Amino acid sequence: MMRKKLVMTTLVAVCVFLLTLSALGLDFNPGKYEITSKVEMPGMPPMAPQTYTECVSDKNPVPIKNAPGQQCEYKDMKTVGSTITWTMTCNQQGMASTSTGKMVYKGDTFEGSMKTVTGPSAGNMTITSVVTGKRVGDCE
Image (cartoon, rainbow, N blue to C red; front, side, top):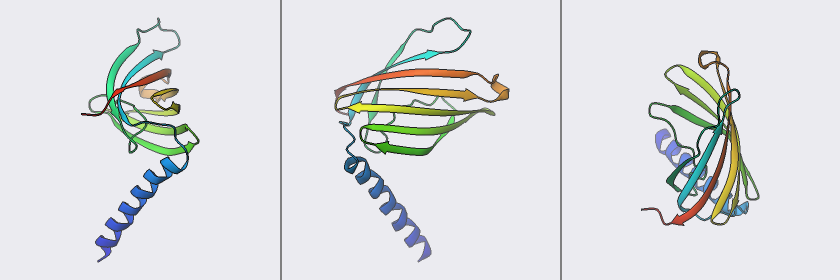
């Protein structure tokens, strides 16, 4: 009985979250997006932008690709109008990092940035990523 209540509560919470995205006016069209990410690290030469495609949905509107073996958890995700902000913590082979980000959606496009601070085991670096995306079709 208790397990059934927990499952029902979880389902209701997920539904409320999805409805909240729509109710808050997020100007976002789910689908397959071509995403370009440019990474900047102080003291390092400029890196070439990386472009890839990813299915972006109402359930997962922040298109962040995890590296293999990386465990990331979103915390404090907020939506105001067409802007989503978040904090994310990651752990990859004992190296911790914390990221804060902001993404602004405009129908079939978005743009944003993310600032990642690594822990001492990864050199206490600050990495800035600038991300843009445009919808190129439906998810497969």
